[in-house]
Image (cartoon, rainbow, N blue to C red; front, side, top):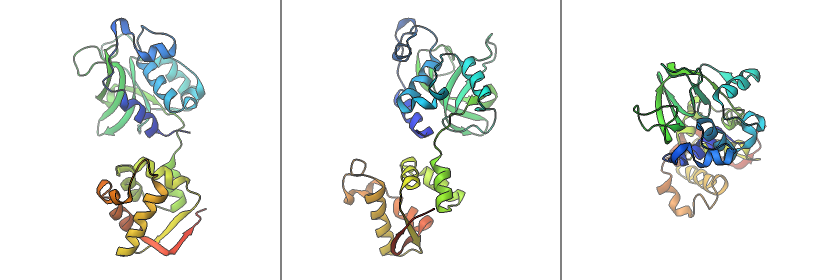
Length: 253
């Protein structure tokens, strides 16, 4: 099962995509209903690329209202505590529709949410619900009706429970350049290194563990490049995990 980060990675690659005349674009073509309002088709398409089963249990809709009703009926509708990966449903002021528009939540800060949205405009001028492309938009939380929360795999929760890590440690891991990949790999490893207090040698061994066992050669081509490309890693290991304990790997239950 995919994560919110997987879906967002797909969506982010689409930023800047612009429709052809008459609302025609690849998302509607893929959906099988081109030339119409396509904000929900864009969301559906992103999930198709990441994990089809995450969107309405493999279902399909091009309607914001229909997705909202489905989410409410299946216990996946939220109106507070929005998270990355939530499918946001907007009710813009001064429109005749209740469910005007949608987007995929990227982040929340204060009274604002940042989302990746299709069929919107790149700014406050132009139509917000029938614009020309895919853009990253920052909007007030007060414009939200709520959000559909897909049943993502929560690798963060799995790792935190498995390794007994504190929230602040998980926050640090998540903020790391390849944090989502690191958390996923650590959460799913059959064996996991047990760390104690730090020393220079132990940090280097921990550094090697992350290179050899967490990231494959496609991600980090050469070990010699690791320190330059990922300067936070030794600090992360030293401060949050420490170092090897008797150079043994222990299974975590």
